[in-house]
Amino acid sequence: MRTVLIGSDFMYDKDGNLKPIEINTAVGWDNASKVEDDIDCLDLTGLYQFVIDNNFQNIHYVGDIQYFHKTLETHYKESPVTYEFHSVGPLAITIPSIEDNDETLIVRSAYDTTALVDDTYCRDKVEFMKLIESQPFGSQFAYLNDENQLVSNITTISDNGVHPNFILKSRYPAYDKDVYPKFYKVTTQEELDVVLQNVTSEYFLMENYCNTTNSFEGHIKVIRSLNILYPPALQSIQIGQYTKLNENIFFTDVEYNSETYEVNPEYRDSYTTSTNTRWLPKLLDTDMVEMADGTFKTALDLNVNDVIKTIDIPNPNGIDNASYTSNFGITYETLLSGTTYSTNKIIALKRVNKLSYFYQLTFEDDSTWEDTGTSSYLIERNNEVQFETLFDVVNGDVVLLLNTTDGLMDFVRKTVVSVTQVKKVFSGWFISVERAHLFLTKTTSTNNESFVSIEHNGPSCPVGCCSGGGTCPTCPKSEPYCSGPYGNPQCFSYQGICY
Image (cartoon, one colour):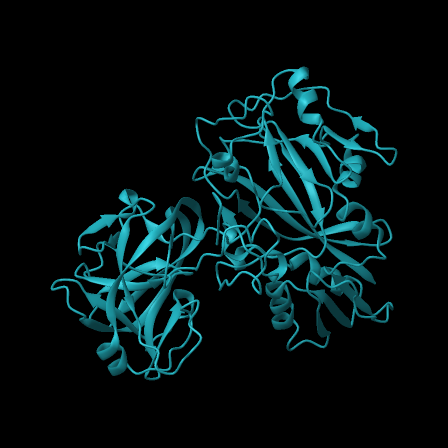
């Protein structure tokens, strides 16, 4: 039996009703951007019973949801039912051929161009909108038909208060996520007519759902339901559900362009649901950054063009350290004797408020240090100095801190004895610096207030490479500040600067 695993996304409207906004195959697993832990997102009880009721002896999973795969693999490890995993990523255009028979269950979450549900309702969001248009949970929307004529069923302009009430979305999966979706607030038919001029063969307009009462720590929620559809009537087995959040908190005051009615750029992240990594949180408001003169400023007080202190790390082996994420291949002694202080300049700051992994490191002297998992720290491992993100730091690693009490190059080695991970909403700042990609920072209430960490941040690209479609080969970027859909590298820009 061939089945398909569908991811359906829902949002609450202003009245608290859940409304579907799109469905997808090649559905992802949102990891850090989902509220719930993995174990709370899947319930395969119904699927296991379905296998028993139909006497399936073989199960094949075709797709890329690793947690789903690992759960099935563990469950059937000691079972007479055989399980086989076929890893097919979201960019694949072909899927493996598997014999279909009465004893075999095939679960597919990979995209299949020959399947109606994939190539019609998942590929083209308008076709899904048309499919549910007559249902009580259907949406108001407008699009261009094959004759390039505007088709609209929008009869009511919903009042979302200060928040957008319409969204211009791509019909198809591949689109510029730096530009779309776009959000608008209109109150009259005349204003709506202006916004409708943005509808094209590739982008359609639909009502925007916004419920600020049923929210999560100031974030608008998106509910993703995972269901397996099976023949002959495409009945459904729900196997899981989780909550995603918008990229930023919503604001009580929102501003719009007076001519286009589009939301101003600084508010757009409050409504986007894409889980990008272009702005990764680095500093809490209370975290402190060392300035060039040895004084400290809190992250809240930093400004673009502030000159801060940094260090230059020796590189006698000629390691490519353009991104400063390399293993330098040097010993602690070489680091200590060859490192010098220098200065740097802040070139960008952006407020970040998103769900993130926090890591707390406990050292052998019982002091602690905490930061987001994507923060890269200078450590010593196997007698070699290197940068590692906190989610890759393990027990026994030695974190290298700098003693700031006397202004000398005085490193302190702190051996990690435990690493604790917590997922919570981070409210703080993204910071980017001009050269070397390094800055010196310290956190409070960790019994390490005399020390700063040597933290890495992503390099900046030449202005203009992003607008020209620049990617990593043409725009020298390094993880995690260069990422794109499905792992495709691409650069991102903010206020004319690429990151």
